[in-house]
Length: 393
Image 1 (tube, helix red, strand yellow):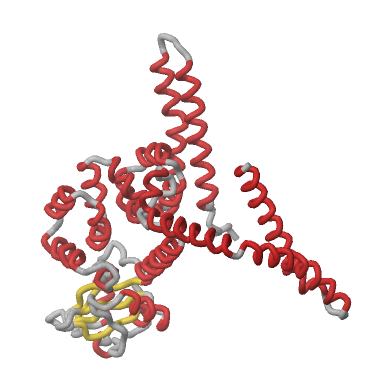
Image 2 (image 1 turned 90 degrees about the horizontal axis):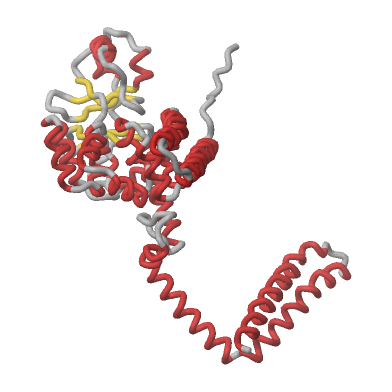
């Protein structure tokens, strides 16, 4: 049997390869700059292209999410070199994948024409995701380039606040009428170039566009073509309104193992749908945000940002830590004698507890954590206080 396993390299291998090509490019370019000669410009141009052509080929084989990972792991100068090698038709997808901080550096590096070209290729819900980071002139140009129906979709998508179902919603879906047969639906689907991603069910509406039910694709394929859609559609299903909390939708997707779900307005009309990939992205972003907040970081902070920018983002936490350090030093000064005795007692307990357990016939390893803690704490105190003593004297 032929090998059908995925031969795509891992994202870490891709990062390693990209970093290696960038390093070679910088080394060779540095050597060429040191040489003087009548053909120096020609040599520089050839060297400049040599590794970058290979790097461009490497990027063409990578998934947009993998490219985003690589860009986030590169220092700013290398990041921009890599970004300039990416094909324009892929830039919009990658801008959606990168973190807020990296997206900011990439957008600042692009001119208005490039931004419009990258954004125009996206779906309306994806444009709405990028809109807060784009200059207003770019949004206006993109808006004018859209068809009237897409303009309304973009206007609707941008009207819902972050953290709502409307902000997760997309408009790339298939809706069918309830008064047609399965054969009509199948003929309609065959005329499509491809079905939207994560299409596990079709949304059944009446003549006014009101949501009536769902028709699962697997049910569609095994049903007699002469059967009416209204007969086989499912009338009991999960639906969301655009103003509902995204967190509630995420919990429903987990509880009912949903792949997609319809979004309807207060009048019952079908507006869009929410898919599992949008929900997973929301959960990941919320988790990342919570982890960054716990560490005193912000989402818009770049790993390779300047020290000054990092200080500005964390000044509140730094100030709190400084105040608590002063308070702790005062407390230590008040109880200096007691602390000295407690440190000595802790050291004795660390040695004594495993010894005592051995004398009682118990496993001394169970008390070894106390010994380890005592050793590390005592060593830490010794190093810290020793350095302080040297500094003061």
